[in-house]
Image (cartoon, rainbow over all chains, first blue to last red; front, side):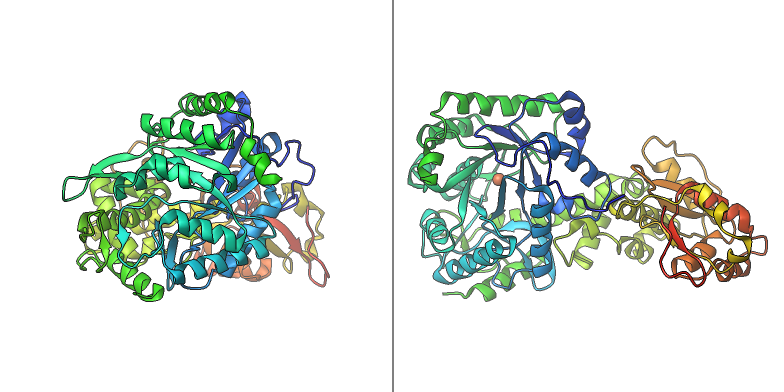
Amino acid sequence: MPETTGLHSQAAPATIPARAGVGLKPQHYRDILEGAPDIGFFEVHAENYMGEGGPPHRYLTAIRERYPLSLHGVGLSIGAERPLDRDHLLRLKHLNERYEPGLFSEHLAWSTHDTTYLNDLLPVPYTKETLARVSEHIEEVQETVGRQMLLENPSTYLAFTESTYSEIDFISEVAKRSGCGLLLDVNNVYVSSTNQEWDPVAYVDAFPLQLVKEIHLGGHAPEKDEAGRPLLIDAHDREVDRIVWGLFEHTIASAGAVPTLVEWDANVPDWPTLNAEADLAEAVLARAEPGDMQRAAAG
Amino acid sequence: MLPLAERQRGFAAALLDSEADVPPGLVGPDGVPSARRFAVYRNNVAAGLSESMTITFPAVRRIVGEEFFTAMARAYVLADPPRSPMLLDYGSGFADFIASFPPAATLPYLADVARIENAWKESFHSADAAPLPPAALAKIPPDQLAGMRLQLHPSVRIVTSRYPVLTIWRMNADGGEPAPVDLNAGGEDCLVVRPAADVEVRSVPAGGAAFLRRLGEGASLGDASEAGFAAAADFDLSANLAGLISAGAFCGYTLEGAAAPEKE
Ligand SMILES: [Fe+2]
């Protein structure tokens, strides 16, 4: 039996349509393969498919034969001062070659320090030094993997007094220097805007939407800080909030239809519940001008 | 302006030490330092890693209960945090940690249950390979058997224990029914293997673990069976070999003087 078969002749196209997709969870493998739901695409966390073999690869291969796939890294630590982990980067390259995903993304965050992997998407100060480091790292990623990477805006809980750029200016400048695309997580916009007391609509309006090739939606948990101010936690453990749906509609009205992923990673619901969330996103996309911004970005 | 390296060093150190002060310059929207906001990150790190332990070690969790498990897992992740973003590999040190964790000392078999669960996870993610079919050995001339070297299937893991650990693990795995166990009933050795889609955990007869370990080190069938006899006087070579082959524990072999390994 061949150990790692490439998918050179897979039936489903690589290109991700401007439709709704969902994060792929092992709990739903069988529902998907047996029920063949009409879903635009699936997205996986790259790190969950870095084992050598076994059922995860078997299921992902079968699902990739039927659907477009998006590959989302959560552990590369692009925002760290330290050099990128070359072994990890090569694993990402290998997954890109094996599964031929239509989109490939990572976070504006760091998660590794010295030899310790901290397993969280930690925030970066928006300074000249960080800007240079993040841009170099993304260039290295794109060069090694051989394709464009999308950078996702973070959800943050605090600010750094040393920051000298706004988040949007920082992200825009990174994209300009590195040539990366952007992944706009609309829930992250709302979470960060609440936590930092920004205007989320103004955030979307100021964001370089022409570079956005994917959107994320997810649920958050409402808490409070010690001063009693709202503190939203990016938990991905429930339905998308009503206000985030509104912000998504506003985003799509400007950006046109963009591939949109529903993330639900904790308290994972049954397949029909997750499918229904994707249907809500699909309805918003169906009302939009098809891919205005995508065409503008391509041209 | 705080350089990035220094900022991240201080941030990381404070994340892993719940007694540490929140680093300066981390503020809420009013520009005032906020311990509660930093605590979100601190909690995410500990909760996320201990959640990954919950997924790998469900039987350990069932034995000690959720509260004890969470406290033990949090102590472990601070003592032995992951060294790589490959979290699939994380937790291999948990069994040794349990063995030296004083609050778990009253459950001397618990570390071996964790060894089975870690072996199960490793086997699950190991490389795929077609197991050697039972008929394969029938083709080998009898005078060549002692010198042949069997290649272990990549999914094979061996767990040995002074306790009836397979019985205990089965009772506490998904669908199991916990019941009283005589801890002095003798040790159990197990083979963990995934010949196709599903991981299987099987009991290994006397001397079988030593035999299998030697085979895994590349010893010939003759040398490995000596290790089996040394470990157990009643070691039964043909029963062990038949059991291992039917379990799918091998994926190839070489004969004495043969240039390339035989594969099925
Ligand atoms: Fe996201």
